[in-house]
Image 1 (cartoon, one colour):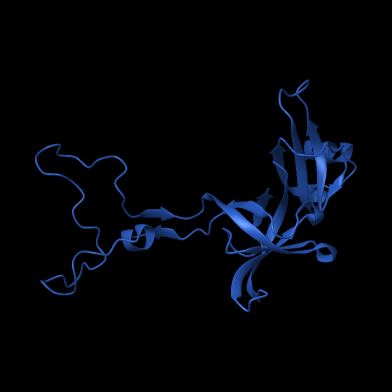
Image 2 (cartoon, one colour):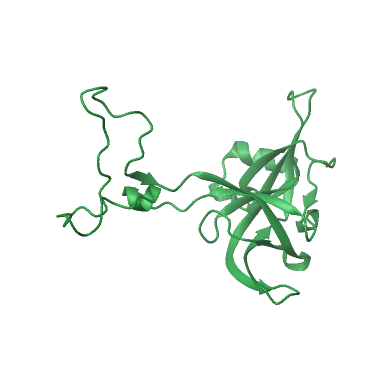
Length: 205
């Protein structure tokens, strides 16, 4: 699938031709450099490795410096492989946001915001134990009963409980491209994408 690496700038809203206000996300997509070309003969599969966002050599290992030097580019902070790229590209080619067209649909993958340890109401949307009456004075957001009676006398695996929330890979599918701003490498997609501001995302079509 063809795609690019980008950075989430933030959310805004625009009006369509009918005057409807549409929430959207602005993504800085590319430019990305082809840092490696995978082939069936050498690697057993076809893919393009793309690099995004310059990185200082001071914080780059010697092995990585040599890897990027083969592509004739500076060291990159983020490197991602895209399998089954639609078009053929060579080492060192630069891919821009022109890869996408207005009106088409893309999938955006990112790491969701980390929220730390959360309770069941925040994490799973539980309603809490009962209402404010019947003596529930201090456990409105408690999980309630989690186990069965004498049989099986244990808690089943997969029971939704409190725990660490967020910080996971999330893919949002079928987001419509509303606008492509080629001169600024910006991509405007309908809806929201995972991650905080300035976090890296992967856009695939």
